[in-house]
Length: 344
Ligand code: UD1
Image 1: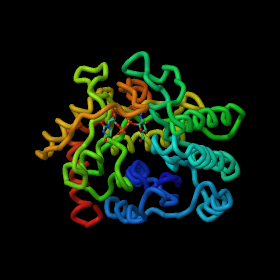
Image 2: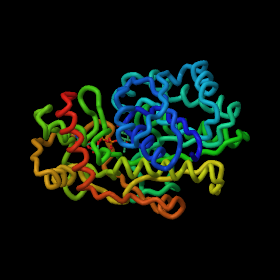
Image 3: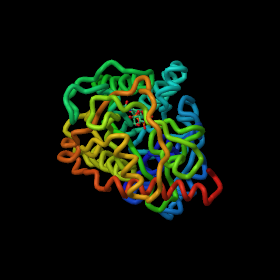
């Protein structure tokens, strides 16, 4: 065993895939989740993949006493990966206080208690949303942070600053901030995947739900952007590739390989793909047609963003390996599995 890692939000989409990779790498994982946007069955899925059942604590990370209790009952946690956060951009505009409270208070509680319990390392889930519409593409980590377009985006910026300030003030731990581009796909076993509650806000779950007939038609938000085909461009990164980067980040901190006490890395493929290209690639990878129509732009969307992942490639030795075709096929396999199980 390499040590004990607390994964907050570990029953969620990226958290569950990361738990699997941590276990595969020999870490013992404690999953914390309030199940506000996930399901306890995910723990079974993780166990079916790895053969190891992670400890699971259902609690709200806003409850500091409960967190203290978790540290007492699971002594020896060396690192934390913090996924626990609300992430719907539109909802954050409607309910800003919910977003500020949930995303900030949970982080503050962790930072407060980490020194007391000797936790050495924190990986924080950040987002390329901090760059807004970058002036230079592909965007690297030296690009300026732009004013956030939503309370959700603002919480990512503020959380990054809180971590930096806390460590600058001498907190006895290190942190790696990971700025994700657009995570997509599912575990190749289809035991775990993305499980959006209600109508999906993100593109790929909407595509797979349309392909299987849960949704009638996908709306493509805008074809008049300044891009080759007029639809928005993003950098779609396979969720298992993304999960593996977290393990490398934890190793790096616990093995004393960091160059600074706070480091940040873009996690993307380096390739921009338009919405229309993504639909076509999905159809090619699965042989299933997607019924879609072009509608107006979605408020708050930026035209194009994709990563320069050179720093993560060179410093972490991490690269996005999965092809887009295989990634989209994995999302489809997961959607079919949900149907098989009668979940969706
Ligand atoms: C955004 C944020 C990301 C955040 C995520 C959380 C940016 C660049 N990215 O991702 O940081 O973590 O929200 O949800 O700010 N689309 C359609 N039809 C749909 C759904 C989406 O055409 O039904 C298009 C969007 O216009 C966009 C692309 O698909 O161009 C991807 O959208 P989505 O999956 O929602 O992710 P982002 O908005 O890029």
